[in-house]
Length: 314
Ligand code: CO
Ligand code: CO
Image 1 (cartoon, protein in one colour):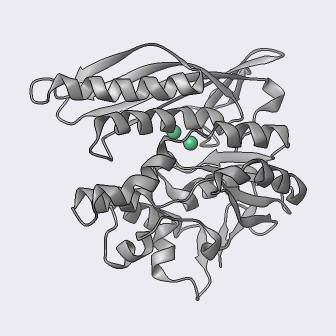
Image 2 (image 1 turned 45 degrees about the horizontal axis):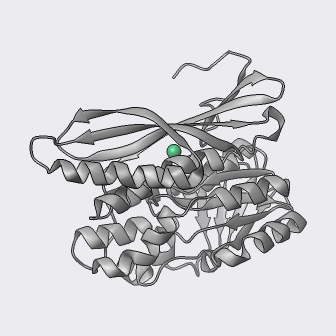
């Protein structure tokens, strides 16, 4: 893509951030993002809810408030019962309602495999955007949801685990990042992104490059779901995660004591993951306090002045 020269583009494609930000006036900017993917759970209503929460997440990751959304849908209209499509859209509508987001319309195309997601528009004060480019040495890194949903959904597709085993992950994927977003804005977080398809290391790497800092991550502090590490050891790793592992090797160094399963877990192609937040230790403590009731937010590492764009995992 050619670079954007419009001065109103506050966040464009250059920093691989979660959403684009366009300044409308001195106190108002638009935040826009789009995301859609194939089903990762069997239940169409759950799939709709997860896809919607995932789409809204990129707005929350910028510290913005989502206002409106458009459905984006692909569906094998001649082969599958239309009730399935209805359930997907109902799930998306339910999450939008919870988020206070109005769905204004959308578009469906005929396709061999179902796909669903949303294009979401939000607003933010131009000076209060939380980009992925503001992390500073001395900051702590917080993660607000466990990772490993890609491993679990692959295990589910292969019949290695029963659907019930996926329930805690489904619950987290449906959960909005709204509370975490509000808290990080209130407590002056320096940077944030949400953890999705490129995995924790991929999105952390984008933050490290955009912020021109190094990150240090404690593998044992990164939360995951029951069975995930064992499934990785059994070889249940999707292709997308294997691709991530190869790409992340270019900027990541692992201490010798970090085992193979953790190295793969940190590249898990996650869906609707939590926010990765960079904040001073004092502000991080405030954010953790706000998120205490969710029970899943924790410190996973810190920002250092090591070589820009690199990650050390211990
Ligand atoms: Co994102
Ligand atoms: Co996205």
